Length: 215
Image (cartoon, rainbow, N blue to C red; front, top):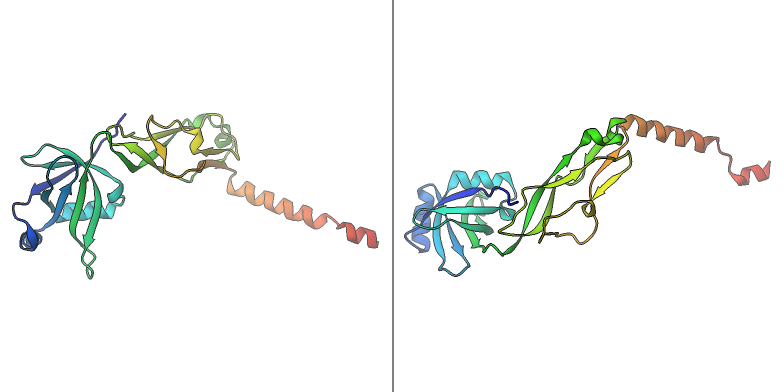
């Protein structure tokens, strides 16, 4: 099931060149360009405040957007470059690439954990440690999963969930080519500390074989 794709509103920029770009910035807009696909490049302007908010939220270049421009059909795009002012580090120009529904892209997909109440290790006081709350996948633009789910049923203290334990949507795969850890159920900190102390006491009580031989 495809997840909700956020809208990105823009205006068509009637002029081109440095003059039109400077005017856009004076009007509180950030100039940009949409390229790719079977149509001509489309010069656009984006509201500065909205763009800055999305940039600060992170993952801007790894997010698929539904670009809405008056007078044009909505199109799915992904950011390919953000040019910034060298002094103020504020966006001055943005490049977007159009995507077909069959295009393959890299996106971060959130992970949801289910059935904590059915995990014996958590019932005993174990702690669910989430190593990766989201996973970068290669997905098809027309079939983006909303989330990945992990069933915690039956997990004991010390058990680990890796990417191979998750059923991935058809046509998608991780960008990392190994069986990496998503989460684990670890012992409570108090129990871990007590276990460490017991190990140290046991080690102190043990007499090395060389000392026994000397006696």
